[in-house]
Length: 338
Ligand code: SF4
Image (cartoon, rainbow, N blue to C red):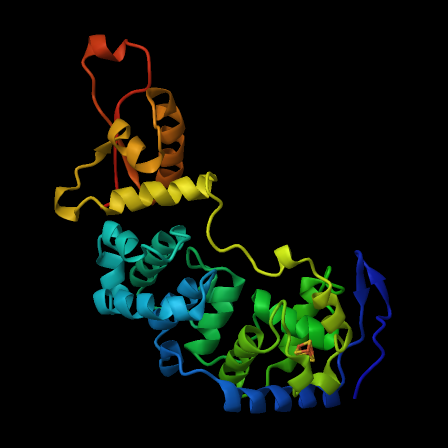
């Protein structure tokens, strides 16, 4: 079953490989689906075909681990149970519900997608149609088409790409041997007709639990005989410096992302019913220790970035003529969007 580890040639810096044999495809399908039956977790979004619920889960799962997502998923759907309720809901509440999940832009993008679905009168059902919705990229379009509408389509995120790459092309570290296009082509061949839903769930689960980035469980792997990365991948991951084994999940203190999070946390802490906005000079000390007048333009820059992403609203205060002639930044109040 194991084929030569060498590719046939090179194109654009990547090795090129022949298409997989039908025998290889069949062995990988069988091995992975059997593994999935024995190891799949019982996750709430695996019990639904509602495109809205599937979309909420997919958006939350981008950049966030399953265990952390589950309580947010349930709380979000308890408050916004349908696409219509999210489309019509206050953006400030959507952002408040997102507190702690991080990557807050996902929250406003999710609501924009919901508003577009409602405006169009329903969901597109194939990846091409889904991609015309705002905030939907190729991965999410494929995931919704597959997990809601049970289409036999291929789509790959980082984990799925890693598994397919290792199986077909070899170790993905220190750098991939095959292009993203080549990996997607193999992923497309692997989707078993009529079982795309189960197959893609299996590929996701296998990448999350078994063939992980830094600790692939090769010794007990049912796909070992079909895998071009085995056994070399084991010594490659063992040689990785410790520092790069675990990905940083919290934003670096002092980074722009860190302060965006601090500003949003401060805005969320203002009760919705009294939220007429907070002055930059009052907001500053909640965001940065030792905040001084000279930091106001910096804070204004952070806040303007949030406003561009739909996460905050900045209202300039109208000044009397004489006062507006004075030097310094115009006073502004900041709040969550309505
Ligand atoms: S043998 Fe190792 S690298 Fe290959 S699929 Fe299994 S766990 Fe992943």
